Length: 130
Image (cartoon, rainbow, N blue to C red; front, side, top):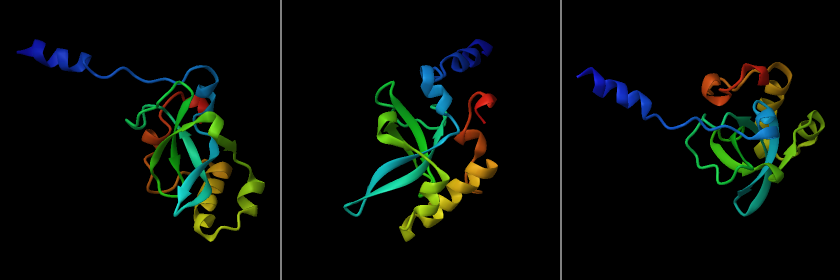
């Protein structure tokens, strides 16, 4: 019957939202530390809408980010990120991260996401953040 169809629409999970200032972070590039072969790397990541992925955001201070290095989503505490700057990208001497910083700079300058990213899923959310 039709009523069965209606109930499935209502049972969608509630939309997740960042609280307060975190919502201003959507669409920004930040740097986060990841462990790579026992070495700490500072990798450029894009802060995404919390609904872009089902990854568990452990606390209200966590951000959902997508890495320019491996295109994976991560959950990271805002206080564990650093601001991305052009100087940081151009000073990077780690060959492993050269490509990541080039992609991040391209987005920084032109808002062009890497071609394999789905823009709608990466930065869904209020268009004012784009």
